[in-house]
Length: 268
Image 1 (spheres, rainbow, N blue to C red):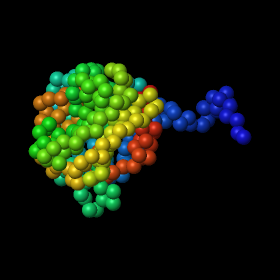
Image 2: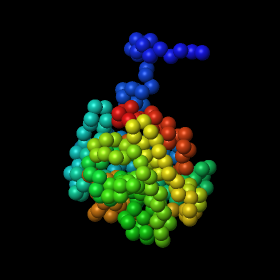
Image 3: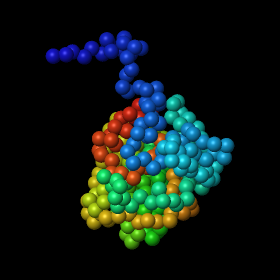
Image 4: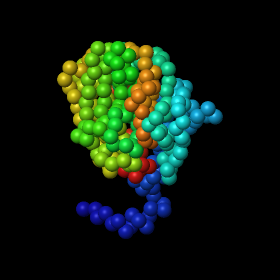
């Protein structure tokens, strides 16, 4: 039997990297995103130009345009964009690479997975976190949202086939404002949709496997962070960081690994 002596670990921490260490998570955060299979875009919220547009670190050049007057900031080692809930959001016009349908024959495990970290300032409204969704079925494809106005199921992932919406909700660890939470939505064509939320070191999930569409709607909606794709509503009052989008069904292991690699940065 091996005895783990915390006092010895403490004395060696200057020589050996602790796994749960904000500095270690900081240097790994962006590289973790760039290693996501099927990556279509990754935005740290720390890499922006003179127009305040947010650069895509995936290498695919999907820069997000700046709307309203949100401010870039950092908290400790966390890069983030602070949105005030009244017109602030990031956007990118519809393009082929964002029209992820789940029918791509060149993908061995087709589907959709997207995620980010967010910190809400309000717990009383419907706020879109990450979307290609106008709230009208004909022009919607997918979205992650925070429903602070629904206490039992605040984190939701929604997909649309152009005629109807399918929703999976999670009574997650999101219980207070001004704390950081990891949120992911995953679509498995004809099989299930799943939502994840992580905070306080715990990653929870919930699944909906009823009536899941075989393909997502090929909508002309723009991609947005912090508002609906119409840009006119569901604005987030809070902060966002480390957002990413994949054209693949990512395993539970990959999603949990992203959370574990990044959570120390956010104190979770």
